[in-house]
Amino acid sequence: MVTTAIFPSRYVQGANALDECLADELLRFGQRAFIVQDPTVNNLFGEKVDELLFEKVQARSEVFCGECCDEEIERIQALTSEFNADVIVGMGGGKTLDTAKAAGAALGLPIVIIPTLAATDAPCSSLVVIYTREGTFKRYLMIPQNPSLVLVDSQVIADAPSRFLVSGMGDALATWFEAEDCRIKGAGNMTTRPGPMTAFGLAEMCYDTLLKYGILAKAACDNNQVTPALEHVIEANVLLSGLGFESGGLAAAHAIHNGLTVLPQTHSYWHGEKVAFGTLAMLMLTDRDPSLIEEVYTFCENVGLPTTLAQIGLTEVTNEELLEVAKASCQEGETMHNEPFPISPEAILAALRAADAFGKQR
Image (cartoon, rainbow, N blue to C red; front, side, top):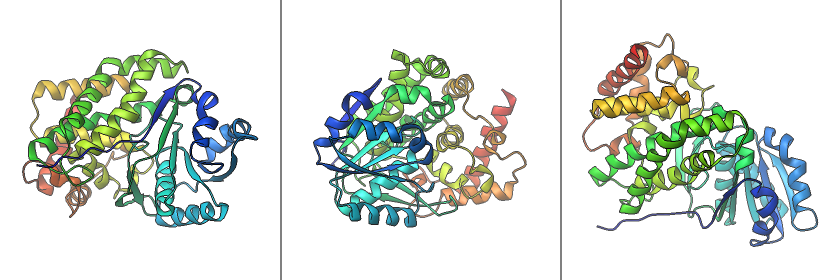
């Protein structure tokens, strides 16, 4: 059996990494950088980035429209080409980064990713999640190579509201469970081939790091402080989860997340918050050990991840609506089919209700 793992070319993390490393790292790719920033990042860091690059790198910044959709990718691609960029830089949250990745790949440019939140495991991957303009999941896109550089300034992460860090923990929480089910089945990872033991080891390390340092990291982030615990969780959210999901594989938790996006009530909740509930439903669906289920619920409660449907906007949700979620989770091409046994929409509906009931009971 042929196995495959894929990684970013370089990963840089630490407090004040932007000040110390940004200009030198960009110069490795050329003199002209096109930078895509979400509106908040542009307001907070636009001038600082200009100052850091002044007289070193010629840069043009563009504000991201807010949705990683085909139309926005095409717009950014055209502007990057017009600027004759040597490198494209995505700076912001997951959808901003994915848009830069897709545009850069279409142009054959090196891609530099600067996450300003540790809210998803998107930064290191070659996976782009494309939505409609309205925010409904549309499709996955695999670009030909991973980012050439991922640069994480831990102080920037610490200065953001801790909800974003917690959301990243929710996304990372699924990594080991999904990779393990892919390993059991021999299912393909994001390359379509099974992952090597390295990927599964990193996925398990991701879970262990969250449980060990998650509460301490949230406390540090609540106070805008960079501590070793926060550094560990940033690495788990961004690097370990990124490597674990992409080279280990995705399964039920992310399929359920994608299904949840068909309900507009969930659109104001973060990706990792919905993935966390998808993970709880996955544990019910796949008959995990009760002590493990207790452990995961306790972790979610301690760091503030949702454990009920109401906590992701589905207070009055009907069985008919949840069945639509379940059907979307099982559609052709979804990662639900990486589970090591057949799963029906009715079984997913039951798991969603069971996860919600147990969360309410606790």
